[in-house]
Length: 165
Ligand SMILES: [Zn+2]
Image (cartoon, rainbow, N blue to C red; front, side):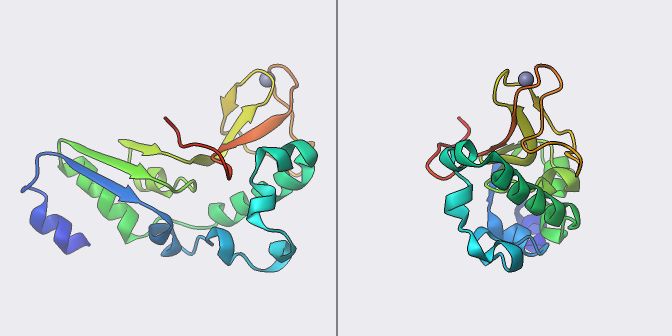
């Protein structure tokens, strides 16, 4: 990809890149259905829904924190870096990603939209306040909002939900 981009970047006025799970798989981010171990007994479809959160927010939070921990141990790969480099060297570049792991931003991308949002983003179910504050082992499940003490949820597209407009 790097050679292709280097060769062609001056041929285009506007460049829009779209990325999905494949680019993060190179960083060993497990895909939804590739998870093994602890969560084998659960289906993502049963956890990543508003109904699942309503029924058992503790379980859903444990699952998200497990995934956050995995992602935090991973780093961007040369694919992420190439897209961040392209943004810096091209005046009209935009990146659309389906990924929720934040690795594009870590690699330096700034002109991007995460259409499924970001797994590290918390949103208060009561007042709507968003933050990327780290949730610790000792926080309750669901964690509580600092402003209104309402339950925090995550900000990701769940199964059956629409994209970020
Ligand atoms: Zn709140």
